[in-house]
Amino acid sequence: ETLNLPEANSDWEQRTGGYGQSDYDYVEVAKMRAWEGTEFLARLIFGPGKLVQDWLQGLRYIGPLRARPPRKGIPSDELSDWSEGVAAWKALEDEDSATELIDEVSQWLAGKDRLNSGYELERKHLAQVDADAFRNAFEGDLDPAQLLDLFKEAPKSTEIKLVEMRSGLRLDPSDVGVGISQVLPVVVAALEPSAALVAIEQPELHIHPAVQVGLGDLFIKGAKEHGINFLAETHSEHLILRLLRRIRETTENEVPPGAIGIEPTDVAVIYVQSTESGVELVPLPIDATGEFTTRWPKGFFDERAEELF
Image (cartoon, rainbow, N blue to C red):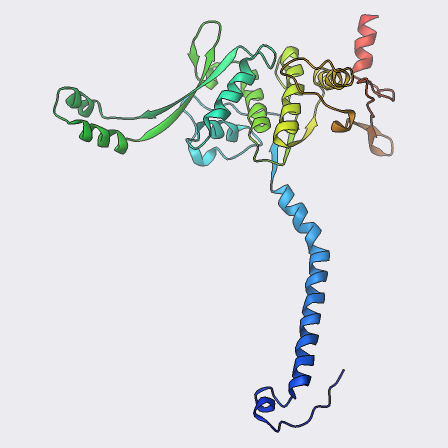
């Protein structure tokens, strides 16, 4: 509304452009209320979008074909892509990475009740010291302080090796089967807790069925202990069977030592199928006994029954 205010006849009115003090206070309050209203509307409109944006910034996507690092390693500025899995190797090489992450990934790769891949991880930090300078140090030409300075100034690198448990051979990641390069990024992503959502295409690719069932427990651990949400596109019957088994064991109070139980509400299985009208998403509810309460659409479990009987 238009305010009919008296002319300025005091120092206060002159300072406030002709308003009386009470009128000036009224205008300031009106401005404040208008600003608060605008701020509220902004939060109402943009707040949810900002929350979604912040959440998506924690998204980690791993594609269906994970790359193997070359024999002599990859420059650190090229190890930033989770979609091809190479960022997982950087996470392991990073000097700031906790030793616990290396140990935990190694245990999951090697453990008989986990993935049982037959390999352990080994990480070493290396310093490239000039051979002549090192020889002089042993011959007494350098004192211990100078030798320490020599190591401090030497170029540093980190080496990740895969140790074959049966023979003890230490191998470069490029020298082992492709299955390890496919599964290791999945393991690191599930155990490194900085992501809010890990989206993975075909985590079972190129790995043995016995390893595929272990992925179920890996995802359960990441979800229950690290608060990670997993969105997995999979064709692995073995992975799903492990999730159903853990639900059944939880209901019957028979979860094996070292495993983690889950409830039916912890898992959502969505079957994606093509129809004449387009793509259809079919939810498949699971009961407390670890069974689907509706018939599985064509594929997967049906083929097993046909081959057996």
